[in-house]
Amino acid sequence: MDFAKVNVAVRPGTKKGGARKVRATGKVPGVVYGRKQDPISVLFDEKELITSLDKERRRNTVLKLSVTDGGKTEEITAMVRDAQINPLSRRLVHVDFLRVDLDSEVHVTVPLVLTGKAVGLQNGGQLHQSLHSVPIAAKPAAIPTKLELDVSALDIGDALHVSDLKLGAGVRALLDARDGLASVVAPKVEKVEEVAAPVEGAVPADASVADAAPLSGARSTEATVPPLRATSIKRLTSPPSMVSCSSSARATRSSALRCSVSNARHRSSSSRRIFSTARNSQILRV
Image (cartoon, rainbow, N blue to C red; front, side, top):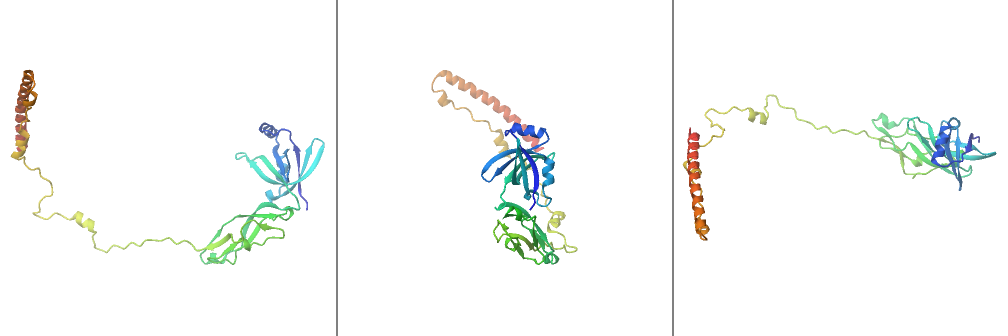
């Protein structure tokens, strides 16, 4: 089997500053690791790598890396394990290459494509695809470009599982055989609450009570202010209690004199308060 060839060169600088210098020259930094060997820092041309990748296999493409270190050249069979892409320019920033052995299995992810038209779709069902890619294990030369699954026989309530996949020789799925891949489900029915239609000529209870006119001769519901009673006037006009001088005047004559002056002041303020209260009650009566 022929593999795409990519020329890479060993780069001396392994720090972050060295990777920036490589990008400044128009090259892309990368690293080659795996197979229990020491990693190698490399640089390569972005366009050469992209054109070497198979359009269907993409990252599952097996590559022949021609590694140049000074005057020495070494060929390494590898695959693209990871690639960092600038989100703005969409240019490659860094690529990880994994060494592979043509006689050993590698773990990759292959896209899953559904083919055919399910019978359940004609009966109103909906096709649901649980997985869009399947992890598999296979030798590099046996890696399929995609996995196809025929859903033509699916009716409402039917499903296809990992065990229904038709895998080639040397290929095995890394999932449980009972895991679902595709199914046809019944459409969801929205519950609609039925509202009773209003009877012609009927008046709602709330509206009839709110719009009902008051009966003739009925008492008004407005609150009336009751007239001020004599007991209320007496309560308002009652003078405040005087200060008891029996306990305060017990000590000295000066204390008794102060107590008498205080009571005289209370009498004067009481007379003014009684006059003001009587006047206000007269106004309230009018």
